[in-house]
Image: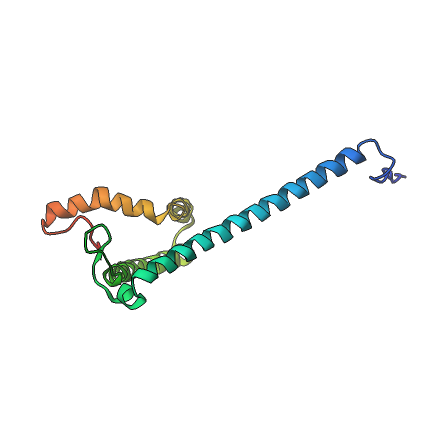
Length: 163
């Protein structure tokens, strides 16, 4: 018959209890200080942004900022309109969704329902790696490689375009 062996309880009376308790408390204090520091930094960032935004909107009205069509902060007559920037971002996002939504949904349906196991095992890791790449990297790639190709095909495409 096997006997159950009971180890002595940790706490008072054991040799390493003081060391273990001290290290656990030190780790708890370090984690608390880290959490407090991250909260403090976040509050600091929000405070600086709020202070700078209030100073900015003291010079420029909110309506002028939202409806203005020119962004020229470095010129002698400074203008801070974001309407064109927001419209360009919206256009780019809608075009991207127009391409990505059907392509992504159809690819997902094909891979989950119709693709043979061999193709699924090949394509799934590739898609997971591509999903892990930040979109800024794709934009930079398009700026450096896709735009010059489009400019060679059709010369009237600007460097910064919605394609």
